[in-house]
Length: 87
Image (cartoon, rainbow, N blue to C red; front, top):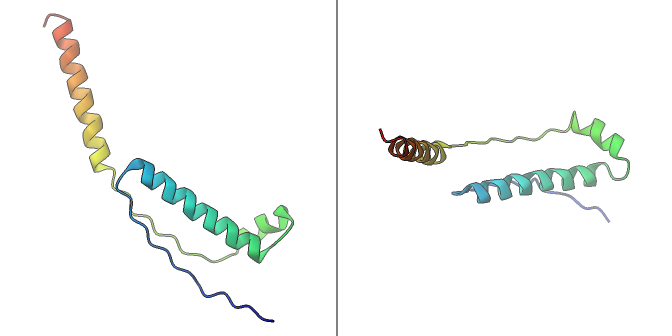
């Protein structure tokens, strides 16, 4: 009995750091699972096969919202520090 794998394609969207980290973990788990199917058994053989196994990964990462929050917190902390110094 022959089995044929059709190439799965995945697209995810995250809107929080927690979601982004979960998606990155899921993507890595999927790659690892497919490599285990391609090269079952010896992890050394799988490691070698990973160097040649084709895949495509595109990541678009926008940290502007996170950086904005960092800058806001720093500004507030600096203002509070200035008020504490009696300035």
